[in-house]
Amino acid sequence: MSKINSKYEVVYIVNSTHGEEEIAAIVDKFKSLIEENGTMEKHDEWGKRRLAYAIQDMYEGYYVFASFTSDPSFPAELDRVFKITDGILRSMIVNADEK
Image (tube, rainbow, N blue to C red; front, side, top):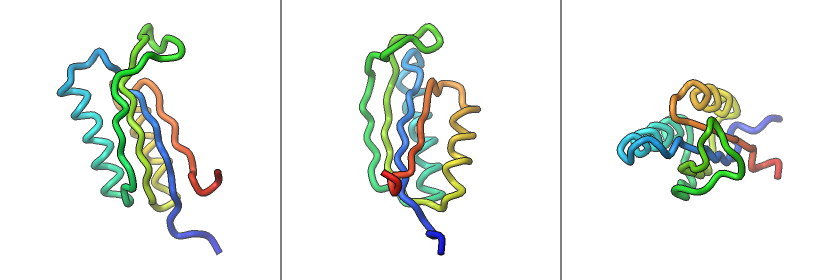
């Protein structure tokens, strides 16, 4: 029998050259999206950090971590939205149940 909900963790990096208001708007957008489709357990903004390597000629990014529980189909949709959103440099979603 498959599980109804699973635990997931996501880390995404926002382009830090955007202004503070634009970064806050992007973070709020994804926080709202997760809360609409699941249960947010933890949301932690790590802030501006140096990247390990240049991404799109940028050396700094604004890091955000979130832990949530949702239907197994939601992470694919979340990943799709990350990919089409301007200002997102990288994102990674992992199933925390499979650690």
